[in-house]
Image (cartoon, rainbow, N blue to C red; front, side, top):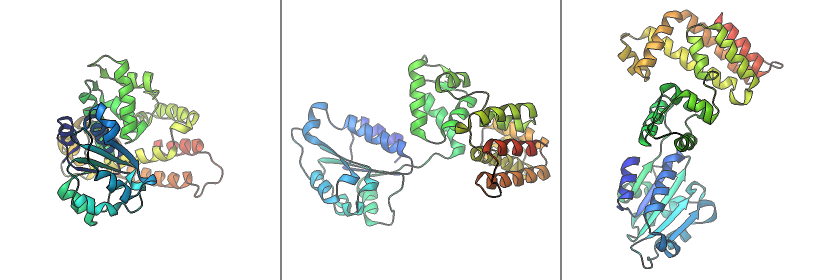
Length: 332
């Protein structure tokens, strides 16, 4: 069962006796749990029928005892276990999960890692409950995720603005949503969010970021490359050399793949690289500038400076100095 379907059922007051929410991405787990807390009970029912536990401070026996209780002047009880990954012997809930109390809604929030699918409890949950695994959004899917989320809250967003958010915040969905919610308060409904909105309201530079650095390298704009490098060196906390190397490695790897793809049609390239067709066309133009031999040499340079940035073969140069030296070699 996917996230949207679960939320829809919750809002329609269609509840299951157990919700086991687990996995690396906390955003979906929090969203489902919050929806249950908001919709399961009326406000006047919560004092006697809602209990919230934390894994570190409780044990399976106490939780089971609470879940087996009966509601008072309400159709159901709600028992929530937050930070379930910190509970000792979480799998001791197996007996309850096999025969849950039908008048209780038990929510298990197991963040940052998945439950062990080989355990009998997880198999019982799959048969008798909502078992939802919250997966991290892959980097190549992040821009589409941001665009879809923005449309879902009544706005639009440019591809550059989505890329800036993804680059600056990574695939931390909670942080991304938090920043977008701030924008939704400031901007009029239906606004197309641009890189200028991002720069003015979130503090991410639209001109000096990894996205623009890669663009400048892609067309061999040496002046722009070193303007950005100078900005990065003055703002080292927001622009680590390791992140720069990672982005450039992905860029060069895509160009190398293009050289050896049997079908160079833009749609085929977009599908193979899992990028937007517009981005595929830009990459194809860059592939015409960078031969496989140059790309192999540049990847070797990245490897060399990745090691130096981690202290191997480097005892005195700062990250800023390493970055400028690396970019000089890449551009020459």
